[in-house]
Length: 198
Image 1 (spheres, rainbow, N blue to C red):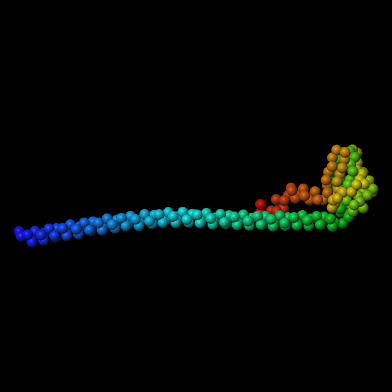
Image 2: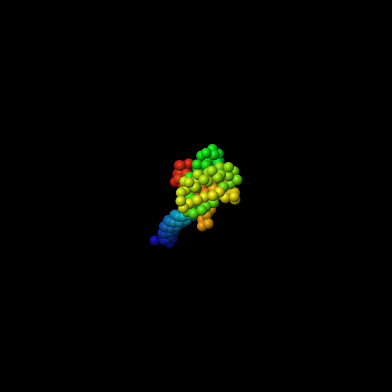
């Protein structure tokens, strides 16, 4: 075999080996590129998921904050409406005619006058109603063991009375009665006004 032929074969073999080597290297590079792309995608997906989670939490927190602000505003408005309702109740009560008002005072004192002697304290205006005749009528109805008299002192109240004995003082002013009513029944009143349990 001539040297040229040997040389040609060596070159052909070297070229075939080089071609095969290049092909294998190309395949390896493609595999590496694919793995790298997959790892980049996984990292991107992980970061995206984290960021979306942060955004979702932030939005949820802002929504919760706004709901809380709205709930507070609604509650404040309801409180104002209840205040107005009880102010109106006070106004209505103070505008009843004197016969009904005298009847109310009588029932109040008959119910709450303690055993023994008591003084009835009213505001200046109500001294026209709670007079000697009113007191005499009350004492007949109170019976034995309980007796009331009108105090010279006046109370700084809008209506109702204060019953004072040596042992006890009962605040039956209209302000206190309405306040007690509100404390006892505010939930039921709110439910009937606003149609809810809160």
